[in-house]
Image 1 (cartoon, rainbow, N blue to C red):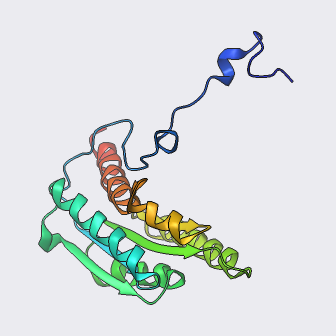
Image 2 (cartoon, rainbow, N blue to C red):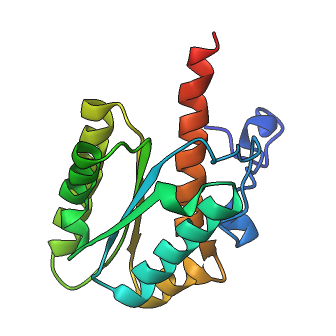
Length: 182
């Protein structure tokens, strides 16, 4: 196999500059953020690791408002832990007219496999909700190895993953609406 520094295929191995390389995960690439004013959102956030998840929630909430969402069109609900995010999101979709649900949580690696089970269950549950309801349910769950990594991603040196989740929700709704215009 050719190495990146060899002439053959060197262009293939060009570095990809992602936000993690730039150290700010909340710098958005690609298309601009559409106007959020036509949409209704739910934010479902986990109370576990409250310092982190509250910062994620506030980041998502402020981002939605900054991009035109009306406060009265944002439902905010909490659940005890990240495992409960899936059912909390489902409750929001079944009890109110929401266009998208943003799920926010934080699972920090510990000494047992609990981390793996929770992360897997939440990721699969949220994926299944997207499929079953055809409504964007955004995975805004930090899955970090340390508390410091979580702090860095909830308003610290790597931005706020809550903002990224809100941006994803808005962009997915704009994508959905683009099919209506075809």
